[in-house]
Each structure stands twice: as structure tokens, then as C-alpha cells.
Length: 139
Image 1 (cartoon, rainbow, N blue to C red):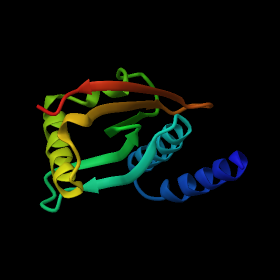
Image 2: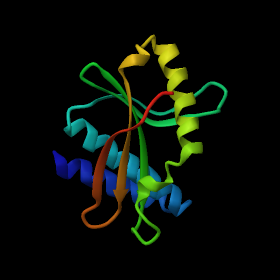
Image 3: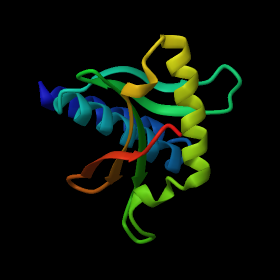
């Protein structure tokens, strides 16, 4: 079954590259992260969640056991300019917190059972995928 997913990913990636190649890389990274998290036992409940005001966006929202996990995916083609996760700066964290608070309120989730993870991906053959747990908090 993995060969089927891999083939679909390649086709989707080829079609996306007809547009903006950076956007295509980011979407490919999100697809890879989604599959990686599911294999790791996460239950993905939302992708590309946006607040109603457009003030924040979350790449992936998932449950790991009793913990609601907000995941930011950072993808790069190479490590030439550093590790992808370095792009999750204080301003990005602020926007992620805003989106998380919006999601928590809408879902009626417990803010005490929340975690922020980053999935760092460097595209290659094969891609390098690293899950960085609990990178910052809600406050």
C-alpha cells in the first residue's frame, strides 16, 4: 500500500511544481509530515486550519493520546541556509498560538492538554523527517 501513497505523492508533487516551486515543496512536506505522524500513532483531525479572521494558520492539528498537538511543518530542499525549524521564530510562534487558541475555543478542548510540535523536513532521496516535540507553550 505504501507504493500507492508514494506514487500519488509524486504525481501530486509534479502537478504542484507547475506553479510556485516553493509552495509545492511546502505542500509535499505537509503530505510527508501527515503520513509520518499517522505512522507514529497520532490521530490527525485537521490540516491547514485557519482562524476565521485569517490571523493565524496551523499546518496540522492532531491528537496523541489525551494531548492535542498543534504541528508546524517546515520544509527545505537543502540545509544550505540552516535547519528548517529555525524559521519558527517568535513572530511565527505568536501566530501559531493565536490559531491554537481559536481551535481550542471552537473544539472545546482543554488548554492544559496542548503541545506545540515542529516537523522539520529536508527534501532529498529519501527525505529527512524530524519530529521536535514540545517546542514552545501556549503562553
